[in-house]
Image (cartoon, rainbow, N blue to C red):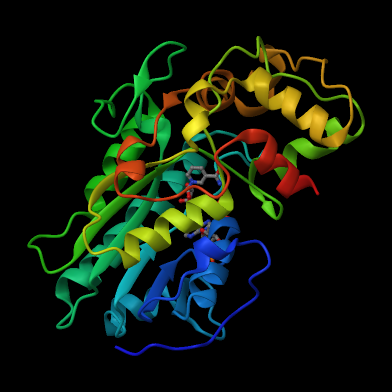
Length: 318
Ligand SMILES: NC(=O)c1ccc[n+]([C@@H]2O[C@H](COP(=O)([O-])OP(=O)(O)OC[C@H]3O[C@@H](n4cnc5c(N)ncnc54)[C@H](OP(=O)(O)O)[C@@H]3O)[C@@H](O)[C@H]2O)c1
């Protein structure tokens, strides 16, 4: 292992999120996506070297086919962020799309876990990002990483299969799962889709606005994954939500968007419209929510860059 002085573009990451540490070679499945780009930038800014696993070949990339043919390239860390975009409004929620949503997560995770298990020199850490859809939506129950979940609807069953696919036998590699909430950032994710109605003054809460809104800034999701890769003691489940997300509702989010953009945010988006666009099963993600705490994440000494919604939105919408 070596210490390098290489630095990438540091702009969105405050100093404490960029502390120098031993350089690793990190393999990132789905590293071309919204979270993957933020993670790559953060890892490179800390002196790590990133190779992306993608469906498309390219510079600093390998394809999933190459991974299955030639096995794991030398690396000290591995991450999987692959997955078909669930909330693509142009995609009907039919059986073939549901199968793609599942396969793009479970099969890529299985392929990477298999390559790690078979590697002569496996990585020290293997991190999978899944979702808080594991926990049953509720206005009142507070969930920590120890809470049960996982077998009541499409998303909870998906997360159960996805996390099971990541398991590798033995203790040669530290295994971490980050259950992420709605990821907020400048270059993609939910905000990109919600921005225009708010900018036009047509934004507002979804349905009653009372449903919990489990959110995280993309810099913190990338930060938690980097923390999990770098910190030797970190293992098991970590909730990837902001500490204040446990009390944030969809109405609070609409209000904070309105004030950050200096626009009214009072026009509610009726639940039946959301259901009509996304279908009843998928609209659960927007019409219901989970009150999730990042209890273990904080216990592992991860320090959030954006612990509250107004500061996160000011950064994103600046
Ligand atoms: N964004 C959120 O709010 C959020 C919330 C909770 C959990 N997550 C999870 O976090 C991970 C990263 O999220 P993200 O927003 O960065 O995702 P994203 O940008 O939509 O996609 C990530 C990458 O997945 C790969 N991918 C897409 N469709 C695929 C398919 N059909 N088969 C195989 N690979 C496919 C693509 O890489 P290539 O084109 O290079 O192959 C893409 O760049 C995902 O697994 C997502 O489920 C995200």
